[in-house]
Length: 426
Image (cartoon, rainbow, N blue to C red; front, side):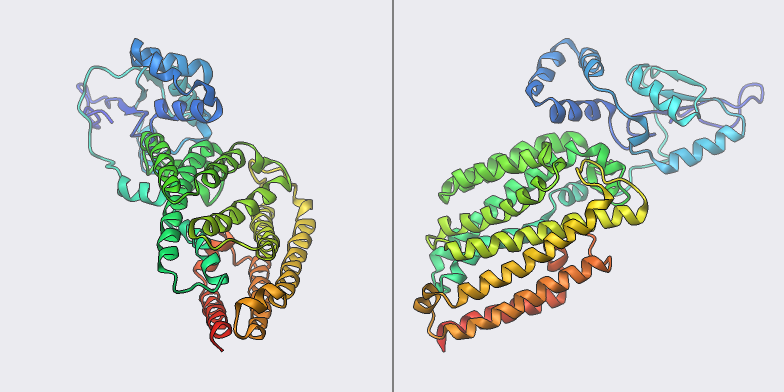
């Protein structure tokens, strides 16, 4: 906002209010907004901005404008600024919107808001007021963008150590730790990439609009740097613990999910279930305690049920709010079918677990395999409770994340571990 922004003028006439588009009216940069959309929607052009910038920033902006159109309704506006401008407009002051250049983005924003009397390029290097300083820490927002709470999913790499009854194989635990770190870095890189790709969809969502990049709390340029850096780090650590092919497969399926599979009905939930199973299988490779076909079968139905719970929760929330779920291939009428499939998967997983605990493989591995029968009602109770939470509208997150915050889940996990240790020693 221009420093000339004062109510008085030379002849008593109020001076105009000059407002910068980037960083003041909106909590983001239209340049990086366009760059993100180019990179995520046309990845084959990812290197072209490096060529265009050689001709100057104006050349870069022009080339981006030819290929990308920003939706002014979905930009993260600073509500404090909008409220101030509305007040000044009512007092008869002229409002001028300035951008890096007087062009399509500024014109589109002005037309959308209907507040401004003029759109112009910035005049020289005028100082700016500090009426509306940035709120919150950009660094803290970037940490949130990594979604560290999602790292709990990577605990699956430790499962093969437990199920193979090698609880005191400390080398295996260390290898599993590094495998979990590799998945955490890779997953965070993919989360950042996914958030950048989903900017418009997130901003149209009542809760996701508050995500760091969607809200403008985290700078987009940092996301463009963080995503590849985290992916490279995760892949490097994966190579060190001998799970590189699995990590590359995980990254490929995750990216395919972000850029297309999530829009395909049923394909999306099978892809999500696969991403859980990959973590489990990688834990077996990293530790040398390989996953049995029984465990894979049980996990496949379990994670399919959780993926369906995630999707039914999204559909139910959208139906309740009377809105459409963005970038998904489902209609509200699909909700009962998906819920039925998810609950069926829950019971099939419990049946497979029951067959598993009485298999010869388990009998040869545990001193008292009959104790493992306690796992069946524990797992069935936990999954049934998750569906009850979803049906009552208590679950608003990924089921695994919801479970990580649920004290009953931790109690069930504790009882499962006690059961396995008892079966191993009794």
